[in-house]
Length: 300
Image 1 (spheres, rainbow, N blue to C red):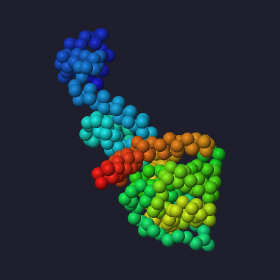
Image 2: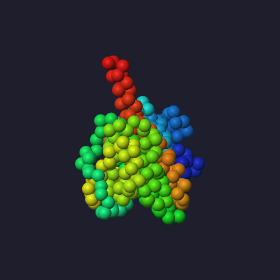
Image 3: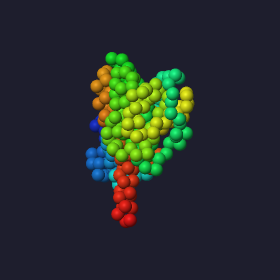
């Protein structure tokens, strides 16, 4: 404030006379003005903060601007930009940046009590020792200016990677079946695979059950009205709703939703850092698994 006051009155009174009336040495004023004109004269911390702030903005932009301080800090260090987490928190706070926050979830399951269902082979134990050991499936809705659209996902529990997805105007069997078909196409080896879902009528339909049987996939279905029985799928869908639908809306058409979902799935699988698997992307975890498997085979 004192520097600003001097700037406003220096033409009339001069710098030194004003400084004699203020608790400010002329040298301090000139040093401040010099740093303003030449950033290289600024203290090392100020210069580093300026560089780090630009890196933080870049990381946020490259990751749909959803990352909070922790994820930004992890990504910077993955890129060999050494920085303390508290520094990232301080700079993001100063820039008014924060990560997206999850909202409430809404259930889309419509249970058909007259249809028989497979048993629950998972029992809330959402863990796998390898890819294609356990998949979970669920779908959600998105409000657009042209009405509701529905988005289905199939997720590999081992890596949390999304192996199949589909956007459609209705929540009929075709929605979830198309997502399953993509998953089966992208993952050729389904020996010993278990497919887990909730009790939604789409997943219990004859067509869906027959497709699982034809692929040699064992079906598993959670209990009635218990969201914890498909908690992992709901967690991934919660991320999708937070990082795409609520963060980037409103949505005009189904095409906009489909393209945004395509972008997000690619980012999620190959670049998003996931805490449950060690703060690495799903594709990186699967690559490490197959690399280790190949090395052990060669060694034998």
